[in-house]
Image 1 (spheres, rainbow, N blue to C red):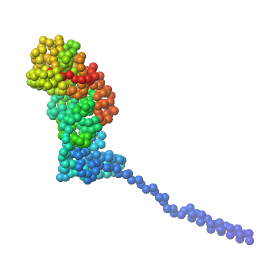
Image 2 (cartoon, one colour):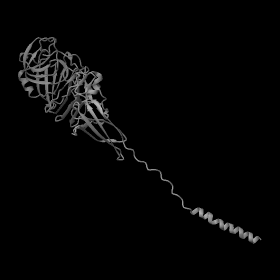
Image 3 (cartoon, rainbow, N blue to C red):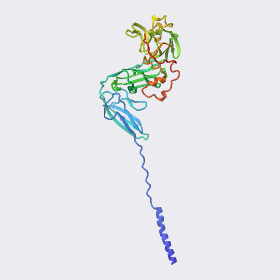
Image 4 (tube, one colour):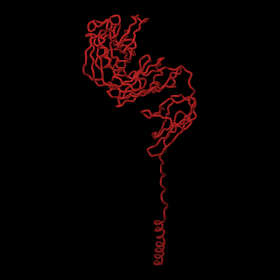
Length: 418
């Protein structure tokens, strides 16, 4: 009985063992793998929006991308002809190199690419506005094409009527300057909005090439006006020439590449019509011209002069004055101009260039901002305050000490010239 029971127990135990072993060797289903993540394509929108109408002739292609960068922009007109456009420095927009034509249709195709290589392309088609009937702001560009200028030549754009303060940022965004070798600069507005200047922290290097575009054609300005034209010029900076005129000594020092090459006796403006003190730039050169001051304060005369070089809009020139040779170097007798002898005036005309720096010191009045090309008649820190757009951090530092001669006066009222 006991043996039979023990055998039964053994049988149960043996019978149960395969069940346990079978459980250890049963085939299992593989664990599910996590789904592979697919890198997202860039998100891209483009302005002008698709099917936009009455788009300004100054329109730019403005892409907004998230998760990638712009890798291609193509702009064509309704015939499929390619329209040249260049990116802004920060690639925030692509600017057509000439104003768009009124009542024409354009298509922009923009591609953005992510780091993964995935791309997104957007196409937008828009139609420009008809030629505007709004009054135009007349612009003038100081630099002409294929000329040579002095090292103090500011890029100057004049406006008539002047640009209101609230419209200046939009205008400034359409002003472009490139220099070779690179010498980054800043635009600065004359307070009344009649002029805007562009200069670097230091004087231009001799041999520099400057290319300018004022892309204002069709630009809405202040809601009531539009820009008149696209104006472009590429010119070169020549040798460095500077004129230093000291009222205390009644002498003009002429320096070329920093070296004194001649000292010239001068007669400046008499007490009732003083010459302005300040940093000016030669604006025009005339072998012969006529001063007609009839109807002007302290004027009333007409006189022909030779070898005249303009310094201010108010009529201050350096010119030959045979009638005051005996006074030159001794006393001031002019109506605000810098009188020099005919021989010296003729010689000086062969030395100077439009854009040369002229510094006058020690007279009774100081140069008024905007009375001529007065971009250098202020410190760099003050100059950049005139920008209607933020100034890059790397351009906020003061220029080297050698940038401009010391002693720039505080701007003040100008004098009548003659």
